[in-house]
Length: 411
Image (cartoon, rainbow, N blue to C red; front, top):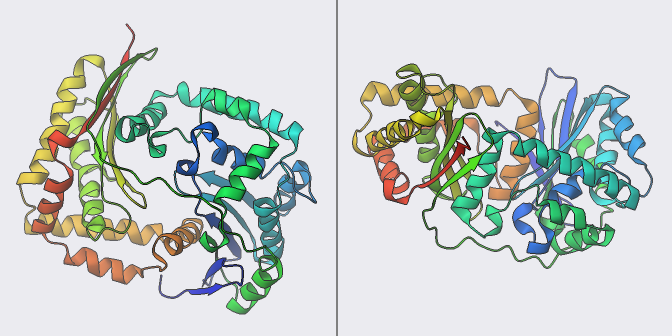
């Protein structure tokens, strides 16, 4: 990010724009500070259900017209829900940008939740839940949230439960939106070969008329973490293992060194320590990764791998051994240099993806009210020392603070 522009509409919605050359595609979308963690116990899954229903009818469009609007001109319309965000976004040829702006405004703010469509989509989501249940490598990730965060909203499955999904009616969606929608916590993000002046004109035309609204939501902060261990038997052929604990929140000053540590431990590179130890050396796993997901008030560090039942404990001990090395053995000068070069390259390549760039910009403005330039991030990475990584490892990778979840085959 070398340069970008941000302006705020009278209703509080912020618009962030980056002009890029050598492209005919515009990527744009709304990022809302609403997620599954904002659901009450009788609303589990409603944020994700709303994401689906946004495509099923508005005050001026039926579902077919929504889906056909951008598809007919070769564009794409999409959405997703996380624990803390809902995003509606589109990619189109620049000459169809105005259509994308208008359609995104329509589905985000003017959905009418037709009763017949609610019934249809209920079945779709129940099928989605069954699909996750039949995929143990996906299911263990959702279950591990529960193991770490317990009964807190962060521990609940984004899809909800079959009972909650079956219960939702039209008024439930309206109530959820009225409570959680806050126009001052919405960002519209745009990346394309388009001038700021044109973005301002279209944002004023389509987004400024949206009424200013601040709901009465009070996000429940996560309290004290207690390590937990569970073993669950399921109708599967391979054991699945999860290891992890809470981690630094988004605004923590040690977030970047910890992200670096996770990249060394189990990042996307085939040379990650966990991949070398469990796959390349012993052939215990096909894949293993470590991830770090920061939230506004806490975070989640997790390691996932699948293996044969008889190798579960050996695999777990190897993981713990690698964590111990990170806590006790500082990286040498060359190791540290290589670790930095690897993450610098990964970050630079990620910025080549304009869809990801657009979404990152929107989330960054919501979370930090700024977008750090790539060079400023590079400088922070270059400044990290081996002692910094040792300190972070000892704070976050304490073996006594780890939670464990294992799926074992029933037989």
